[in-house]
Length: 311
Image 1: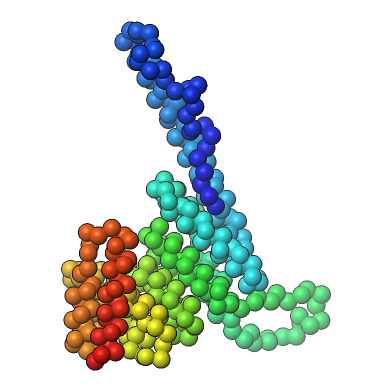
Image 2: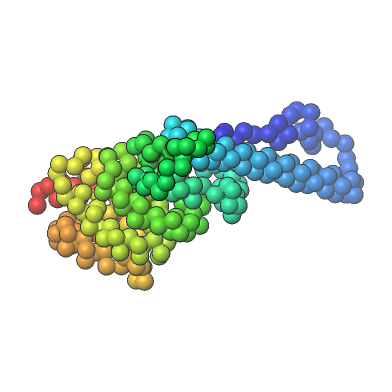
């Protein structure tokens, strides 16, 4: 979905107000009437533009969610890619973000629940209770298991929803998001694990309920185990370092955080020197612009990894 500027919002030479030099003198009453007319037109244009964006957002969600509900993984992948593209387009406009947040109060348009009901749902061997389906003319419904690319895309969509709409973290908690994501982190491949760490950060920040679940699942221990293992892909270990930096940086100064003991856990799991480096590095450039912050995060994560390999 690409949000385009409507034709009626573009100003042309024919509707531009005349320049002061070419206009004839007007009395105060006519100027007030002209200003009121201009204001009314602007309000109408803004209203039409808002309605247009809302229609585009809802259409994009309905189109993507239709495929996400599909029984076959390749259709779900198509729907997830469409949703991810739509979320990136929505993120470019504050008004689009506001309208997207409004749609997430409508059950039929909620994205997060469907991710857990379809893409994150573990396929279990179904027990055969009866043989009626063999003799029936009704075909059995077969749901294909989620592929690696489907899980990775679903994690990216989950991350985007939680960043654009903070209330989505509550929906994720209702579907036991932390245990599900910790299972992905411990059992899936590098592609899914990297996306999982990004999704974890998005649902942990400013969500006490998810933080409590993360603590109960020994989440820090799982991440520390990955970053310590030199056999693990280096990019994934760097991603673990970035995760710890972001999480500790967020917890600092929040005494009542459910994961306020994270410093002690990191010190116990990674050692005093590495823990001190992580704590100091987590304070990096809050005044930097987003691009500089991202660069600083990569550099600090690299230093954390080097300290672990050194000691």
